[in-house]
Length: 480
Figure 1 (spheres, rainbow, N blue to C red):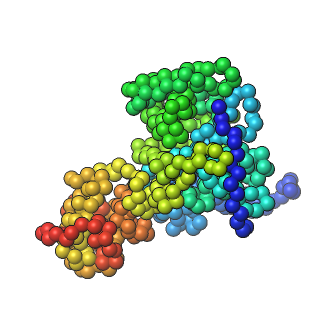
Figure 2: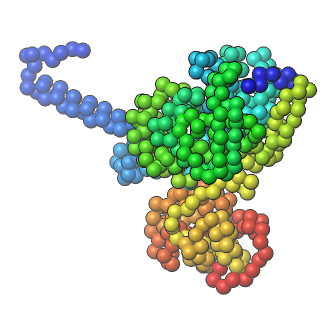
C-alpha cells in the first residue's frame, strides 16, 4: 500500500491590387522582375530562418550549411554555429492505477536524463522517491516531504506550471541544482505498451526478487504474485513493470537499481530493432499515453540525438548519497547528504566533470592522439598519457612527444588536425581540465609542421597544474 502520511516538518524561508489588363509590356516586365526579386528575397530569408530555428526543433542536430555559404549569404547559420549545449530531461513514472483515470498522483519513478552532444554521451540520474526535500509553499517559505509527493502537490495546489513546474523548482534548488529543459510523464499502461511493442526485453537479474502480494490495482485481494530468479529473464510489459516497482523485502534503493537495469534492457532492445529510424511514427502512436513538452516538430531531432549517444549511457543513483531517517511522525524517509549529491550531480551534469564517484564513462572513438609537452616539465607528456589511458582511452592510440615547434607554451590547447574529431576533443578537454574554447582546428601551417600520424594534438601548457590533476610523482621519460 502507498504511504500517504504527510511529513509535517516545516522550515520557513524568504522569498492587393490585380494587374491592369491594359498594362504595357514594360509594365509587365517590371512586375515580373519584382515578383522574381521577391521570390529570391523570400527564399533567402526562409533559409536564414530555417537554419536559425532548426537548433530549437532539432536539438544537437540543427540544419547547418558549409561555412563558405555563410560568407556569401550573411545571416545563414553554418556548421560553425551548430548547437552544442547539453539537454536535461526529467522523466516521471506516475503511480496511477487505471481506475484513477487522469487524477493527479505521486511519482513512482523519478530520474533525470542528461544528454551531452559534445561527447555524445548520456547520463541517467535516479532519485529515490523517499528522499526528503524542501518544497516551496504557495504563500512563501518551504515545507518538507518526500520527493515523490512534489508532482501531486504541484497539481493539487495549482502551482505555476503545475506538478512539473514545482518539480523543476525543487530539482533546480540545492542540493540538486539541476536545470530541467524538457519533461516526460508516463503511467503504468503506457510503460507496459512500450515494452510489449518492443517484443519484450531481456533483463539480467542479479538477485532473486519475490513479492507474493504485488498488485497493479492495489484492490483488496487483487494480487499478481511475482517471482524473479537470478539470470537472464525475458519480460513483457507487465513483468517489466512489476520488476521495476516491487518493494517487498527490498527498499527504494534496490528499486532504482532494478529500474535502471530495465532502462538499459530497453535501450539494448531498441538498438537491436533500430527503432530510432521510425521515431516519428512511433511518436504518433504513443504520444497520447505520454505527456511531454517535446513537440512533434522536435521528435526527429531528438531521435537523431538519441542515435548519436545510445552507445555511451551511464546510470547512477543518488541512493548512495542518502541516509535513513525516521521523522517525529514515524515516517521512514531518506536524508540527502548534500556534499555527496553535489559530487554525483557534477560528475553527470557539468561539462567539465570532476573526479566524483559517478564519473561518466565515455567510450572514445578510435582516434590517434599525440600529447606534446610545451610546459617544460620533464616527463610530463608521458605521465599525462598514462593518466588518459587510466581514464579508458586506448593505449595504442596515444603517444607522448616534445612540442612540435620547440617553444614554451603558456596556454594548453587541443588541436584537431582536420576538425572532425569533436567528440574526442571535448572528452580530452574535460579529462585534462582544459577549457572547451581551447579545442580548435589546426591552421594550415600547423598541419604542415605536425608529424607523427596523430589526428589530435594535445599541447600541455604552463597555465594548467597537471601535477595536481594526475597526482603522481615526477618521472623522467625520454621524448616527453
